[in-house]
Length: 303
Image (cartoon, rainbow, N blue to C red; front, side, top):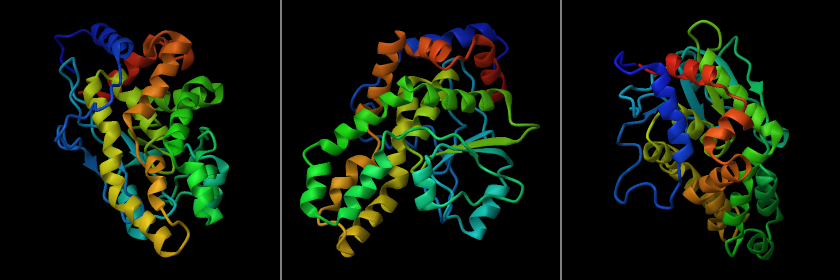
């Protein structure tokens, strides 16, 4: 962190950014691939596709988010032995699992290096996972169209995000993860948090974290949207498998559930403003994170 800028000034700048943050449709510039500027440090694994180091981004105050301290990912239940070895090399000390019980029941518990156990902090997905599985499991094209067609899938996603803000249990679990990032997990170990796809609950956590660190809001939105690039091939393969197996006549109905979109993120930001007046007040009052925590976050995670 540059010595010429006081930490108090940087914290103030971060909170100002939070107050002013606005997610606009089309936030990623046309023709700009969101993972190119700045480059995202992707962790290539066979059993998970959206594992990333949150570090590397430049901040408004001239600093840079440190690599190797915070990671975000999709579910880790299907990791290979080689994948587990790769994770062991990241120096993880805490893994936070946002999945609700039905997700873990279906996909399985995380596979982690020896000595690590995922901490369950279930954040409600407003029934998203159950809704998707019910639609697929019906094997009925008419039922699937009734549940997901005509813009209903996207509308359902827009109903998921506000609960990240309005539900007290959800707020407490997001806050706990941000405190883990601020104060460390014991020694110099790293934190990893994840949900099923690593895009919605994980995406909201990362959005708030990077804004608090003073990363420009446009860059933070690009990072959120990058899940679409990292998940594209896997999600297309899932849709193709559902069509080939006869489970879905039109698996493209799932695309709004598989993607992240600025309209989804906007739904959470709008809820924060409705409930608290601004994202800054959502942080201080909704999440209960005071200035000392924001200072600790920046001190620990910024060069």
